[in-house]
Image 1 (tube, rainbow, N blue to C red):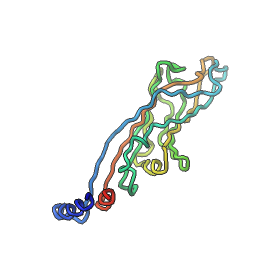
Image 2 (cartoon, rainbow, N blue to C red):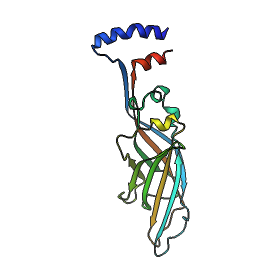
Image 3 (spheres, rainbow, N blue to C red):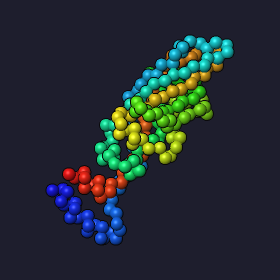
Image 4 (cartoon, helix red, strand yellow):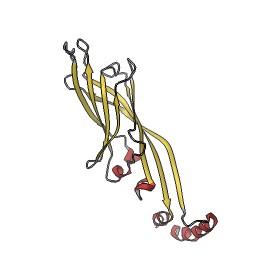
Length: 199
């Protein structure tokens, strides 16, 4: 029924538009997803840094539930017509965090993986004002497209950071923060895709 109706309407739409291609387009400039506070352990932390200072690393992963939040019609179709771009990630220290601020954070790398392919989305290195409790990481490239990651399964964000604490200062054992990821979505459905989706 839907296929027959679309087949009857589209030629009229094409003649009105005066072109050889008919498509529908939708765009969401920004959608943000936030997960409950999560704790990231800092190996070797929880001590006073020695005179020469403390250098360490930490890591963890975050599943924002993007696979469940993105409707199928955005995923299905040619990549150039179905776009999901990473805009930014924000980490906000929770009240019960093991550290009062991000002064100890030297750098943070944000990557995405689907278990097969990995790509770096953003990178932060120094420059936060003293006593900052919020860290924002922007996209390395404005042209990133995460559709291929979502098509092949659950998309997970990985955080990997470096810790630098001067001698005599307390090294945090962990930090707890809420993570928010913001994305841009756009879909362009051609006549064939619209017809096929109505089968």
